[in-house]
Image 1 (tube, one colour):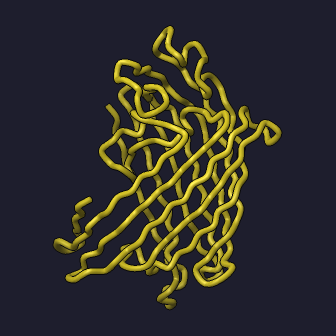
Image 2 (cartoon, rainbow, N blue to C red):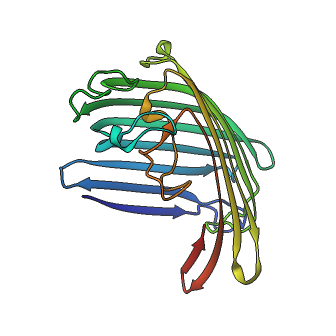
Image 3 (cartoon, rainbow, N blue to C red):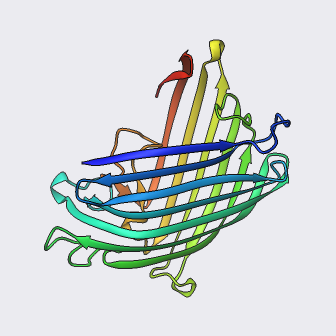
Length: 256
């Protein structure tokens, strides 16, 4: 069993400016009955009246997971249980180069150690990249275009982000590989406060990618309903459409 909790804090340091975007700080924690868990902090801070913004993600993990193999045709019977421990840090800083368009660097550091719980499996034999102990050190870039309304509940506009990151032993990592992604969201306001939201994600990677850094089909943000552990691969295209609608007081609903 796993228990989880989250805390989100939003701050507007220019309340007199209707276009000021809100700083966001999200803390998430989990704990299992096997005395394992995770702790993560994600933040976005806007500076100088939205002209710059800083993002960072910090995570500490000691959690059980499953590995089924790589690709779309892996059988359920191939499941291997393992525990992953480690720490990760990602920092991105972007500057506005024209209205709504931001550019900037992106760096990542992660250390991971896997404890295989399926004797004789691929992870136990170190036959999969990422088994054992690995270090990930990467540098890259991000380009973001954002024309959405500045408040929490997005009602109109688009947000598109293009990014790429390279990992290599000469940076201090264990493996050489690269990844790129294109993610887009578009919001259309409808009658009675309803919003039609579109999302598209295209992600690709190449080289000696640790299996836990491959692209998952599913999770809690895209293609919900699939476990993020079940299918992983080097390339992914996914999308979804949501109809968001107000219900009563602060509550709303969504069809996706």
